[in-house]
Length: 203
Image (cartoon, rainbow, N blue to C red; front, top):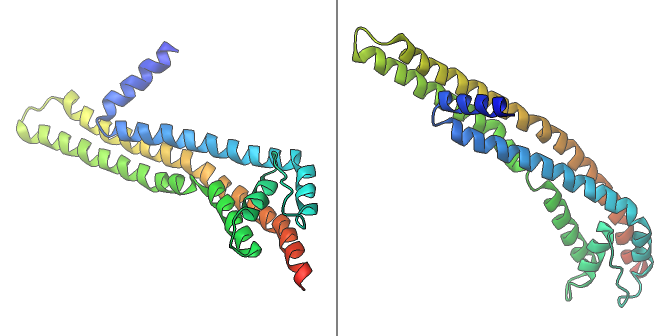
């Protein structure tokens, strides 16, 4: 473990100051990726566990006094929609459904930003490392080769780190888009039952 920490510390030192924002991007990307998959997984789990509650919520639509509280995310959407007084039921349901979709999509925009930002930070480190090397070469005719090579190492390390962070963010981003699209389809399909039940009495 100490060897790994020493290697990371040496990598950070040799990469220069640009490694710190890159490290923040890496840790935040990892945190967002894990939290999003946990959120989607819990949504699917609660949807399965709350299937019975969801059927109760559908059956109770004709009785506004019945409240089907529980783990079902769909029942929660219906309950919140019914509590919006002065708003047509269909509009209230659509509003709450959009809120749920937005909540499930939260974080994908950050991952998308990291895919672009991390390589740009890597390029910034490349530029600063090359500038440092040229400054050493221009300061003296007998520049220290080790000092010059440290600038080149900084340039290469930051570029590699930026690309790694970008790839780490790209995988959960693309997977998340697929998962989110499927969740949206299931939400629209399941909540369409509520719309039919709401519209049917007035038809």
